[in-house]
Amino acid sequence: MTMVEIDHLSKSFGDFQAVDDISLSVRKGEVLGFLGPNGAGKTTTMRMISGFLAPTSGTARVCGHDVVTNALGVKGVIGYMPEGSPSYDDMTVTAFLRFIAEIRGFTGADRDERIAKVARRLDITDMMERPIDVLSKGYRRRVGLAQSILHDPPVLLLDEPTDGLDPNQKHQVRSLIAEMAAEKAIIISTHILEEVEAVCTRAVIIGRGKVLADGTAKELLTRLPDFTAVSITLPESSAGAAAAYFRNHPSVAAVFETSEGNGRSKLRLTPKEGGIKLEDIAAAARAQNFPVAEIYQDGGNLDDVFRLITTGDAKQGGVRQVAA
Image 1 (cartoon, one colour):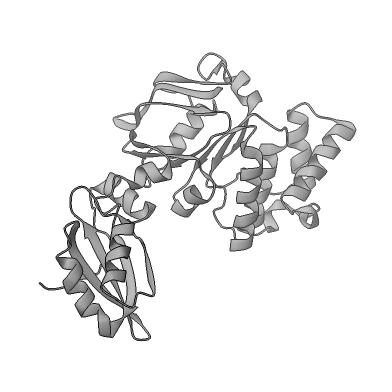
Image 2: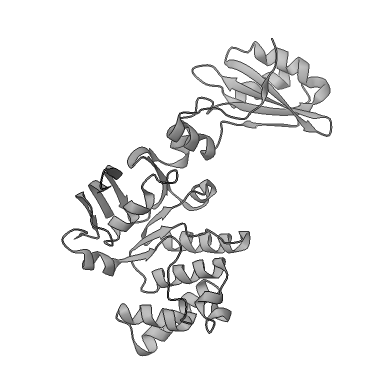
């Protein structure tokens, strides 16, 4: 079921085109990572989807509600955590969440039960009677997430949901997102690429207001020239012979070597057109009796994809090529 439809959405501020003809859709059960450099148009797009910013042209529909003609209907079916988690700093956490709950139409025992539930889920129970302005950045983010899920909306828009959280808090929030994902459509705007690998089922990369790529993490990784590269860790004393051998392998374009310390080296084998098969390299290493400690596919990561798509820079690894 499609929950969010973005249809030729554009936004300009004077002569500046912040968002330029974006179209995409998000289905129930999807967690979409919305990626892009600073100034790419991520936050502007999120604000338009949420109904808080009118588009210059095009539209978006959330659970059938059009952001142009029925922005109030959109607000009723989304949970939105804006960048920076804005709130009323002089309120206590309890007072703020009560305020949000009552705006959403909840009162009495239902309101209090919902607040207690989100407080437990986000581990902010001990902070409930503190003014928001004395909270750490991490707790403020969690309060912002709490208000966005208070009414159990079918669509969540989360702008940098783990920004400022420590590793344990990040794990907790990511686990919560994964727990909610099956019954919702979730869009996460982030610059933290590990976030995409941790919780997202799909990623969209935008730059200068345009969609540059759309796919799963694995599909995006296949864009890298070295997607099928293989790395081998073995003793330094054997690295030279292994490098010379694999340099002549029919599927290997180049061999790069780095020192791993403790008497070990890593060889990274980059592919010719057609790619490298890990099982072929492993079989060849066994046949040559190279003392391999570790062998694995090493085709790059989402940082490399992001850099390639947004800047055209396909450099991977930063290691030296073994001389012929």
